[in-house]
Length: 226
Image 1 (spheres, rainbow, N blue to C red):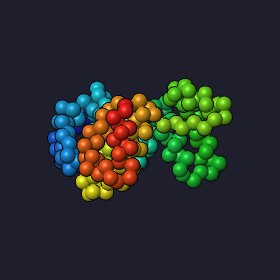
Image 2: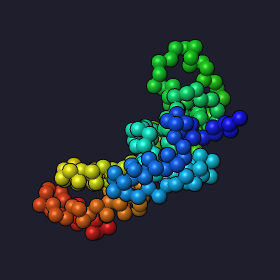
Image 3: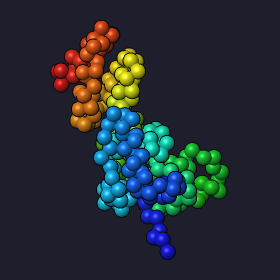
Image 4: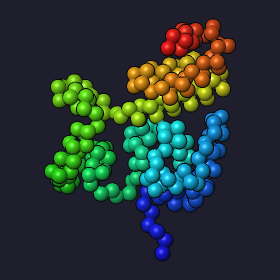
């Protein structure tokens, strides 16, 4: 009898009929289309599926593209809940409270369905919220707006924006490339994501021939001053 599938990534592969080697090959093709190198092999995928390692933001972007998952969903749910197959029933346990209640928020509920969310589940939600980021919880309790978006997801978005910028540069859409690159740099500066800043710096040479385009010279000067 086959071993039960224990990880959402393994299940997502099974839904597509892919082996670990198939997925590694698809990630390599996605990376090559972006002018990158994946570096992912069967061993790396096995470690992700066994829970021994978690794919970094760069790898998650490649995985999302391979499975056809929008980056917005990847940012919303976090690893591994954004993988295909998440629409199947999920237990409302301590590990899934935030995810399940977030999904429930999007659905129409009557009084009876609301009552299925027990006091224990809501207490679990509160406990998880309290451990997300202490400063944001304090802001919420004091009545200030708090955006509950973990820094890891901000970093993922920053990296994705640099990939978008590369695409715009290849198509000579300099103004759009500048806009998303600046957004990535602003985001990276705010959260202290040096990896994102490095990726932005790597784009600078591609902008230099377009210094006459409004904003490009200021952008290059900004990078030099960092």
